Length: 424
Image (cartoon, rainbow, N blue to C red; front, side):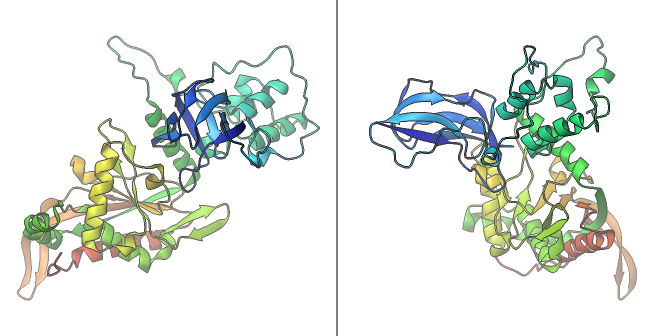
């Protein structure tokens, strides 16, 4: 007999943890190889985890709603054969925490333990254990500004708080405390109260964190899309007959953005402390509205490797599967630049929030017919043109106004000078 450790798998670049949303098996249950044991969720995608072995579940280390780091042992499975090279069971510590223990931490648990049930925040089992041992109140724990994913309080955050508290550097009243919007609310007759679903909570946390991290600046240009509109109207039927795909404006815009990113690679970057990481790969995220009203961003990996036909097919595939909740975790990770199409809602202009850790996001407004002044050999004339606003929010730590404005103008130039003679 042997014990197999079921680990939290890596589910995409940059994903360091996942939340358990349902156990489908219990301790003592028999399982077959490749049978689904539990469901977990990353920032935006739910996924099933199958067992690589058959056997009996001997121990489950985490409960529903626990946040589990990648590589953590979620369960132990007793198998018929021997499992070699087993390591000690780890249930509440990450590799980062397997260091020499801090001898200054009180190991005796006081009689009065903090109650975490009154908090809306999620804390890892390790953070809870340390807080209990150090008798850190729930008010103190809520006040700590976490540096983990989505603002989560990490072991380092808590130990620093404890150290500062001992040295008199901070108190509960002196620690930055998140504003509770609830105390400003009041109820009136007829009000309907809706509980945020899990995805909406994650989106909210991600957006608030982005505004906290990045000083946002937005630049806007108005682009003449007349040639693009004419070309699409001319070829859309033949394109569908040939490729069995509908061609939208999205792949055309992606193509223009890819060209501009090659011209200005600093916009295709991210920030790590005081370092700027210029990305070699151009991975374009496409913000997609779901039937639930929530938002997800599937990513076109290496978008510069596709022609217009290829971009059309991959955009249609990703968007379709996103709306059916069939995306794989890796398909929403690794984006280096994001595009959001406001025109699908009839909006003409917006100021989007940057999708961290990227440094820019482009919004496309609705294409609208407008009278415009054109310069001709015979003088200025007024003509009906198809126009759209392009608005780009960018991280002012990396992208200054000149670069941001020049980049978005370059995207517009590529669209206005679109080759209407190309065949697809």
